[in-house]
Image (cartoon, rainbow, N blue to C red; front, side, top):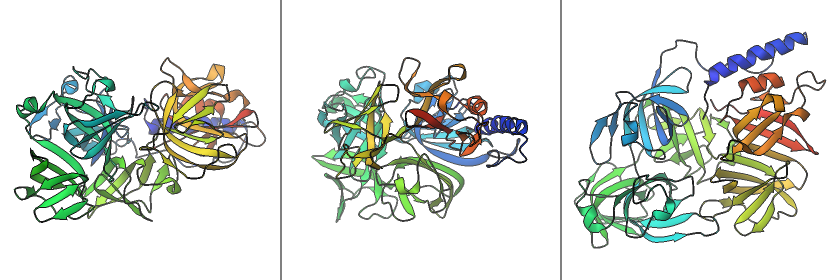
Length: 498
């Protein structure tokens, strides 16, 4: 994660640009100005909905929220007041939450007044299996399929799960936090153990099963979510129901039927000046899509980490903007995949692609058919590929999209988070290798500096800067795009996200 506010980084970068240009006796500086509001601007009230990414306060959607005195509200109706010292007792990395409060002027910090913990499923694990090639685990709860991705799905640290995906077992009752794709599958972000069996679960004070999914069929007093039949005759229903509506259902099993006590329509948020929502795109159209029940208009949005043409159903994104009359008018759309690549790949088998880095290393990319969107008819011996992926363990990545990248040539483009950098050694390393370095080693000594006749190939958001300015602005965790062409690195750019 970023350790310095972007506004301050821009100020530092622009000061260095001015100094470099003064040396060259240039008359003007191109590019946009600094980010954000003026110092001392009042915080903006709003809400962030997404995955807890880390602590030291609570990180959601890249924003660090102070939580001292905030109320944490759980699905089963209980609430607690937390402090920075007690947050770990109630919150875990990977949980899905809604953080209500305010955003500071820098956009990177805020203050939480209420945190709503919002899981997707609670029930018994069935049909458990593991893809031995990719390590992705699959199981079902109440007819919804759950995918657990190694090192991308956080596991309850307490026994019996002990933080290990391998300790999940059929018959266990668990709570699943994750991202529904609208097609009956939830990509899990956190799994918490609840009970070893039905009898133990029935003694649990929470007492109810929970199911989140899209209505696939309706009858008199019933509805179906995937293969799960739901009896709604005794349920409280808080919104209009129709096929295709995303709902949360609570209830108990009567045989194989879920007897609902509550059917809650996931229809988005009330009007607010600023909302940040993370999720998997569904119901994509020419100008709108849906994220976890929130309808998003992206027609006027600026895209970060990709372009509008990259949008597809099932892709993980974050949308930011005001909500007016129930519609989020997005000003920003951020693609949430950790890694992008364009260039040559080697097809090892049906589930694995290898990327050879310029320094001779190998990145392995697993293609799980339940996660990756793969363009048909690709011939990797003739064409470059355009890849998006999530970082898992070691040098392994899990593909989320594989596309044709055009005619095969020598160019490679790597885009991902900075793991380490050293200006004295002319090195920027991308993708954390887990031992203090990166998986992709970018040699900046071959990249044109600002004194080059054709201009600098060091950039911050498409604005040319000196090498010194780029390194001064750089932080571990920043998203960087670097290009290798004709045998050398020839461009590097910091991609700011706010």
